Amino acid sequence: MIYIVLNFLPIAVAMVAGLLIGVVWLRASHILLPGWGWFALAALSEFWLASILAGALILAPSQAGEWTMALGSAFVIWIGFVLPAVAVTLGVHSMTRGQVISAAMHWLVVMLVQAAILQAWGLAAPPGAPGAG
Image (cartoon, rainbow, N blue to C red):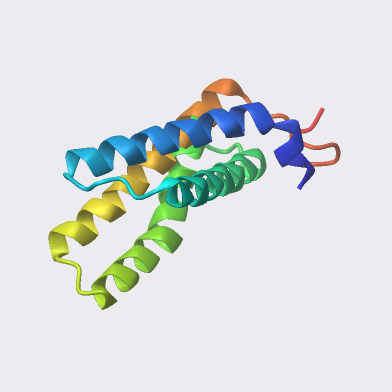
């Protein structure tokens, strides 16, 4: 997990972007923001999500263009892990189809923006990783 330390600043910037998107998304949905405890959990979750994306981008094969791999990796992670978890969890809690779609789209936007930030910033690969110089 040394790549998290090596890339702390771009990961932190991606985390802040995810938090801002979340706040705007909630306000646009006329949902009151929960308390500071929620915000701390959201910050930790956004940081971890950006860290996982950074790891995926560092390890992504270079057969396609860098931006294709960056945004494609975010989309594949979203459709493979986030979408099913959000759909099942919110469906079980009797959320409407619109609420489920809104929550799923929120996470897709967050992941694409975070991947774009990480790609634009540039990531340092740990020694011995593919692409490390």
